[in-house]
Length: 104
Ligand code: FES
Figure 1 (cartoon, helix red, strand yellow):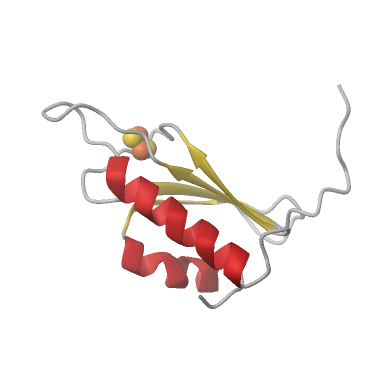
Figure 2: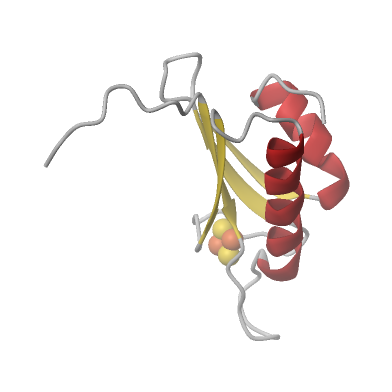
């Protein structure tokens, strides 16, 4: 394996978009898809997508019926990793402002 030491990623936001059938355990599902799309769209529109990576994932183990789970990592050592749950689409700008240093 090769360790990549100079990746341009400053912040990596993992967004759970895992869905489950109705009536079972809660999941991020459609809200997760919407949060992912909005985060990715903002990163692209504001020209920071090269350093703020947004990735759709499966279950992060933080399942909540009311919104999406996010894992925010800063590979460059700018701070600790953060986990969020129950994130709503209208909170995307705040997530970027607080954890990626970018206003939406
Ligand atoms: S389904 Fe999203 S964290 Fe488990």
